[in-house]
Image 1: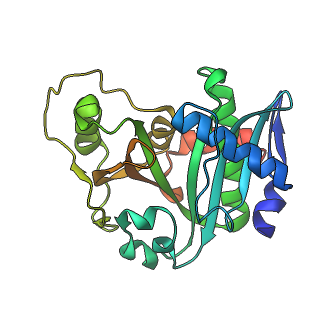
Image 2: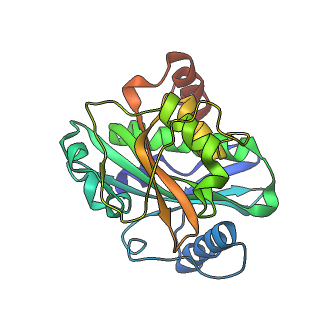
Length: 243
């Protein structure tokens, strides 16, 4: 927590990223998560939230996005993603790892790339402060019907498969194998968060998982910090005020 607090708050223009410091602020994050993931008012909370810092992304003082974090070393498999994917191989990752969870933007925000960009810049500051070598999480597609996302899932397997050095095993009973279709129907579009991972050289597991509780299909997604393309790394560091 101290390392994360040292990197935040962080602001660029109208957008500010900071830790949720009060119970009311944490509850606002839980409410936004429920609205973003379930499409209605409510409270999205699970057993991990008590120990994970909640991060607020504010635009003009209003909550525009949120995510939560878990920083560890040698314990990649002990977080949220480890419920669905066998991450034992990643426990051997030599550097600190940062698990990113429940990243969402306010549904009323629209496609505001600046909010997402500044959120990633704040993450870059945390990565720098904690000497993180691997950033990972679960990236979600809406709904639980794999056919709806067949083209996108096929693109994942074809273009973004993870390295053999860091295998992600299977743990869930609701597995979706990534299809091999070269011309699967649909537009093959990726959600904004997943696109951001790939812009930084990210990779995915060889399968996705249906999550009936969240009403999503998600895929394990990771970025090795040392492998971020240099041009992208320089731009992100500049935005984050690290250079």
